[in-house]
Length: 177
Image 1 (tube, helix red, strand yellow):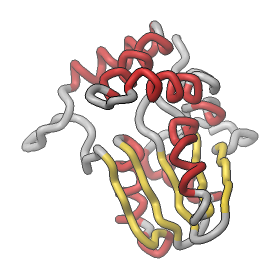
Image 2 (cartoon, helix red, strand yellow):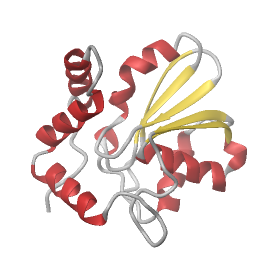
Image 3 (cartoon, helix red, strand yellow):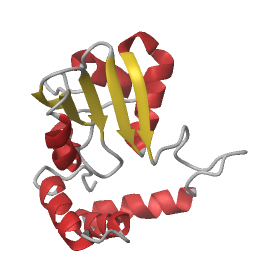
Image 4 (cartoon, helix red, strand yellow):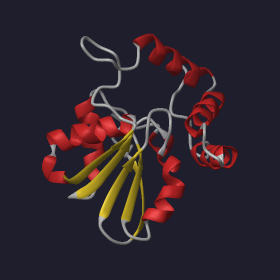
């Protein structure tokens, strides 16, 4: 882990603390519209998870270290809301550090991300292909992913445009090696 690198947090609003964790391939900007609404009643803390957005240079070796990096600057006794991968991380923190979490909310999440023995998660080849696509063409992959997420919404085009502008305003999460 780079000692100079810290996880990027953005806080706004006033009231009980709520922590927002984004999904894989995204960054904290994905919450920008929600944050503005939630900030009317809560102190909203959105984070760029290690390896993503403004935390792109924060390195970790395990899920435990990943969570410890988040907890360094996280508020105590907050509501934690995690989307997809963020939900998996928030669930792990709630399990290992229950004193740090007042409530846990997961959105489109699962306790295990990938398929395994007796677990119907995302197939490993699908995850590998998605990782490769993100590495090769982050912008196009994120645009397609957001379009899928907005499918069926009466304001899908507008929603995707706003999300795209927010998420792509920060650094790409994966570096090509």
